[in-house]
Amino acid sequence: MDRLTQKERAALEDVFTAIYADRESKISSFYRVFYKKIILNTKNFTSKINYKVFKFKNISLKRK
Image: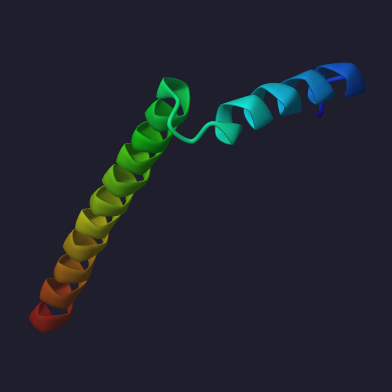
């Protein structure tokens, strides 16, 4: 399943270490903003779905 060699993994870790070492770099801020947008949108989307499912279950229970 893991397709990275040890050398590739070390190189990738060096890249991410360099990105996150400078917190004010454009790449680091881009990843932070992008990550927050994905997480917040996912939470909003799932909460809307959960609310609709909950509402539907309550309506169907009241009909019985």
